[in-house]
View 1: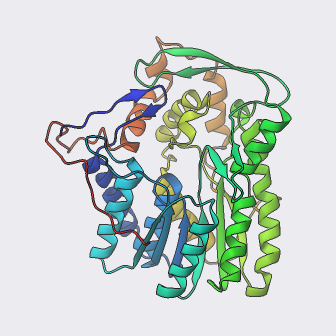
View 2: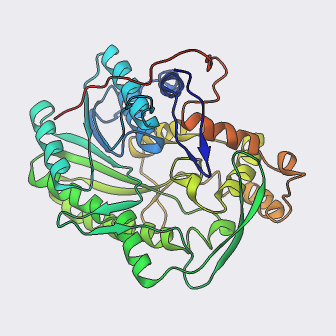
Length: 396
């Protein structure tokens, strides 16, 4: 079948298997070109491994450090004429390339919040790897179901006061106003339950009790703080409360890991278009401005560049690890540079539909959105007939 992008709002309901594989191959090529990560991890568990920073972490570990990797994700295979999800195609492509390079791959497709998947993961690690020396938690989901069946749902809302801003339609490039009422206390609580640090804690507890963590194990969780222009909806909103909870969880996990000589770190990453960030009001404008000024400054990084630099120069780099006052690793220092943020703030209220392409890199933003789903790569024939069905070996 010929697969085309079908975009509804901030969602693309189709994915291209060849294009998704191409993105993975490009990331692998980047890591190989950068060379080996000295003193890198050898056995890594990635929770939320099928896209964005999770997939990039898996590639950095496998192809930068020759690590055996276990990936946990919740993705949809193709069904009849319906394409698989992008994460399915990307995980399948990674698995093929890793196996071709003689690297161990273990894939578990299921609800990472569940006790069953946690138990299954421990069993897989004990059977095939004995222990892991790194755990990356990079899970982004709209809701979380507890073992007793209770469902919590996250919301993207401000706290305390309404939010008014704009969003840019990915298809038409039209700038549209967006207004959100403040979140209720229950909505704040539920968002923290879904996107905060509790499940990270449960994963580490389960892995420790199962004897699946090696001495000196490192665990990381990714967060984003953003700049002042995005704080009303992000840092000062429901997402911000959830991200604050990661700092609390990191302190708790550090205490848990002390018996193993292990550490837990929250890493603050730069703003990038991911499946999760594309849904946040205001981020399309902010990222389009950010992409333009950072690309011109030569400081723009994508997911694979960020995770590879995190591994090689921070987590496993030589010398003492530098953190902020909250103990977080800062990978957003180039984004928050004074000249970068000055450009964003000066133009934040100036962007119109007539100057959108001049003041921002919305063209690059659109391209990044399409490539998330396997579209927009120049060397792929999108008129070719391709099968949506791609096989992948799963555990269980």
